Image (cartoon, rainbow, N blue to C red; front, side, top):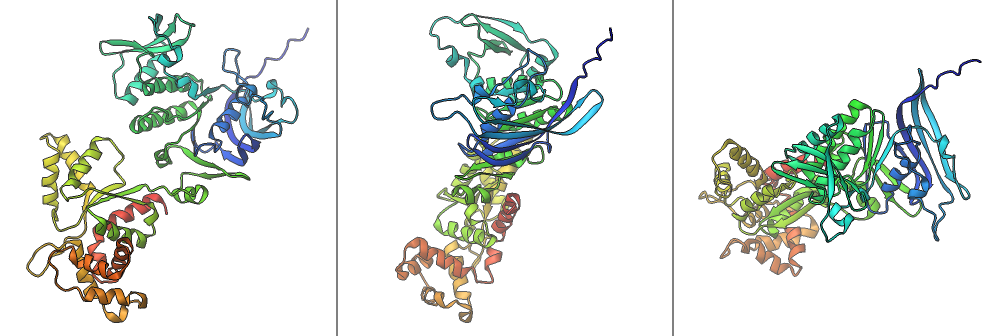
Length: 510
């Protein structure tokens, strides 16, 4: 009797793309997953992000009986309002069978009547792990017990367990001595535990973010080479710094082990990691799902009607705000700038110190001084030293970072060497204008400005003009600044702020 030829194993699987005609809220989209080991899917609520992961989970059959096996009924459960009929999507993929590489294969999935097709045994074979939001429910909530909770624990001493422990420590900036497997007596629920310093604790006492990091790392690192890992809302419970460290670490691991990690997120700064991953943004409309590469503030405004403002400028008052707003308008980025007030000039330094302590992303935030006080770098540094003490090298680095957050309008002096306020500078600019160059619709405003020569206090140089216009303060002030911007002194006066805003514009890619 002739012997049967050996079964040739499937290996080196790779997901190339997902094309959806109709699936839940998704309509007519195509996503390319061949560009990077990591793919981030962003978008607002109800845009279909999670549906992408669910479709990919169901699109594969496990190589081994003990591997996770996801069925359509798990995510697309028939109900009174929907049987999911008409669903239609496909995946393109590649794999090797024995020595033969199949570089571009396609499988179509649909539900025309009662059953999904194809049958589960015809799905492409690949290890797939889906990490849903439900896995991040803290143990203390999942068990919901008020009595003594007993459990057994054993050390995770295999290579993956040791790697997870080390990686989690780097992500969370902690030293974990031991990583445990935990089994609760009640319901037999499986969980995790750690020893950190002299303290040993299970998931019952872990923070939500700490549990999330361990579970994601365990899912990704435990997956075999060429595995597919799907994580829903990867940023859930995680601080920005920890999330970015986690993603950088996972990106390197997936590249080395030929794994693909696809995750959803609501966290816009992930889009700035475009050199480490592929980013898609989805938005659901009545007729189709809009999709584009990266995260575009401009595209989001057009599609959702909501303008995000990633640039923040804190100012002393509305005069400085209108001056900076005018510069932003000239650069074409006014819609991206948000303003806040800090009051007296000395508050600018305390504000920036507080922002720095909060670990907020301050790369796109400044506090702008009027230029009439703390005009020199030395004066600003002295104020920084007053709010940020310490004599170690690290403190000097922190102060240098803070002083860069405090910018100033170019200090201007009068004939006797006194620093001028923004109101005085604008007044001089208005008086320096050539009448022949004044737009017809601003002639009256210019005439009012020429009538203001000497006032009791500096604010009067602008306030008196505003009072005589008969318009609201905001409208009048905007027109005054717009007119003053015609002066030859304007670009010099705003040059320091303009330079910073030009850098922000470049970073926005607009």
